[in-house]
Image 1 (cartoon, rainbow, N blue to C red):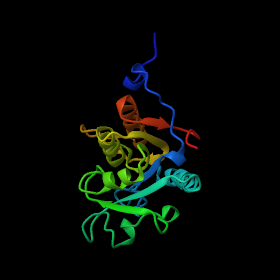
Image 2 (image 1 turned 180 degrees about the vertical axis):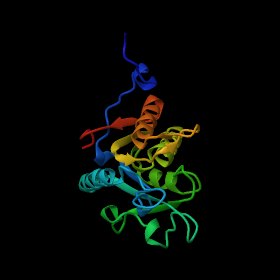
Image 3 (image 1 turned 30 degrees about the vertical axis):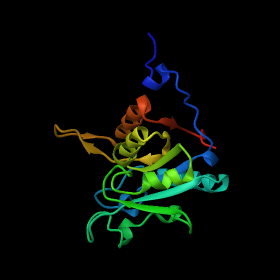
Length: 197
């Protein structure tokens, strides 16, 4: 029995992750909202630790860095004027780093992300953030349509448990793994361990 292959493997596409210094690191929705309350992610803290290390390497290497933050209604989820909507402290943007607020899962929708990326002249994206199955996935899918080559740092992403539609629950880890498997078929290179340098 042969092992399954992605469409990208079957097409012979180079799946080598890019050098960080040649890339744009896009950090998606790594906000306090995911640390407590109804959207708390079981794997948020390990993902934040991993993303913090990734951001440090990206800064050292000269990568372009863009922070994405979901913007909700005042007094509701992702209220950017409240602590819950703030980007987590270890990943706080530095002066000169771009911050883009969005209102839809796809970080390109209704924002100037595409223009900001075009201004860098780089076509390699590295995505990290929350949630794997939602905003990371929809952004990676849109990036393909816009001509970007996308890599997702798997350990810098996390998601939450979801209802299975028949009274049960699908565990966050399974949702995360399936979302990455789907994306690996055609939309993104999935980097694990220390593949990004």
